Image 1 (cartoon, rainbow, N blue to C red):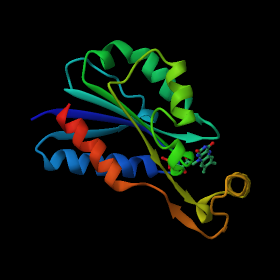
Image 2 (cartoon, rainbow, N blue to C red):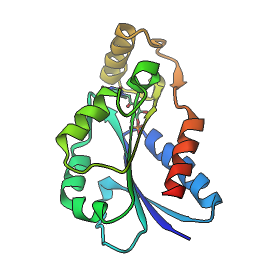
Image 3 (tube, rainbow, N blue to C red):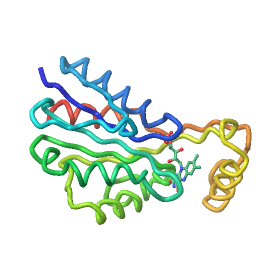
Length: 175
Ligand SMILES: Cc1cc2nc3c(=O)[nH]c(=O)nc-3n(C[C@H](O)[C@H](O)[C@H](O)COP(=O)(O)O)c2cc1C
């Protein structure tokens, strides 16, 4: 039985939902998963976990800076364990941008860090227009209009391919 740590960075909670799905799948295979929010400043101690996963969402073109900071501070510990990274963004709803190699945010992020995760993925996220404040709502509607996405201000649209999340979870379990 492996102890797996999943660290996440989220603004509106969708990355946590993805983490919970990964946890359920991995735990159904007999392993243990702990989820921790990077915002709470977790300390990573080598040897406490058997595998480490980081999941982070994109907001206005970037993962939150605390993700980069955490990776820079803990790179040696990450590299001492089987490790994985996934990004959540809505550009990944487009088939030509939904692979780690073709997703511009993930590619840009990988160029900025020197950690090379053993397993990578990118998942399309969720847009919940009614929950957004005025500025964010209209910024996202504008971006969606430019990129031929949904613009109905009352819409809640989930683009996530949950089968793909499951497949990623199976890979983590098998790492
Ligand atoms: C204010 C705002 C800005 C966003 N900016 C981007 C962006 O620049 N590129 C992108 O692909 N997705 C963007 N998204 C989509 C988010 O990545 C998506 O909603 C994701 O599911 C958010 O995950 P979270 O709830 O874990 O933070 C944005 C969403 C919001 C609400």
